[in-house]
Image (cartoon, rainbow, N blue to C red; front, side, top):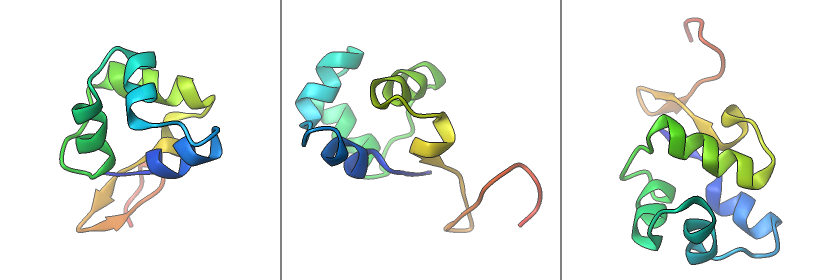
Length: 76
């Protein structure tokens, strides 16, 4: 799963991973792992992250089929 968390953090006042983690009740290490694509957040955590940025889930997270980001639910 790809994400735009790093870009969104910097667009929101250069928010640190620690600041984002505090705002959503997670650890900085978890945010770092999600941002690096090493961990997929729960649906609740994904909604919380999107809410912090005032964005929709699909503005923050993108599903990657075969290593390629996809949009929508139809075939690629």
